[in-house]
Length: 170
Image (tube, rainbow, N blue to C red; front, top):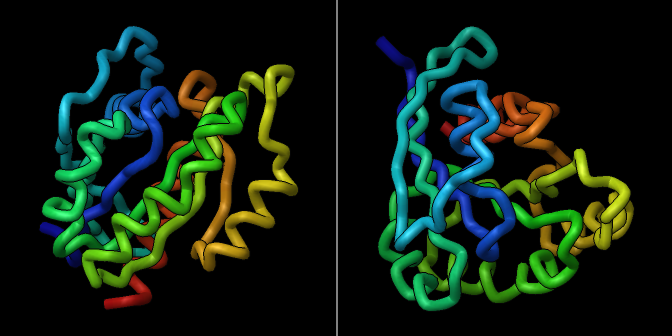
């Protein structure tokens, strides 16, 4: 039994770690040999946040530009979004406007959080935390966080926070 059913879209450039993040959240394990998502992948998990059971439908979109055209169809009915970029690859955050324009063209309105992936690779960082926070504010993102699917740091927090935001919008 659950109190809420939410659709979450995870989007961002290819190689940013969307599938690895999703698998870590689903299994609690780091699975490094993931394959490129062709189009879209879909998983379901129920979590408890603030005393409410919420069933999350998590839609993981292929990040290659050739798949971007299908994103608007799957965004319909979404309740929340996660824009994921790779902290070791500046171009993955520099494309944020392209991704957000695809989302906003659909007319859907929902909270979107900015998440920097691969925080365990801090020595290879190309996007500073302060720069990402500035981008999150300028794009009116609902929240900003960095995570590591490898170590598990902040993975649960991402989904807890987006769920909390969606519960407020109910």
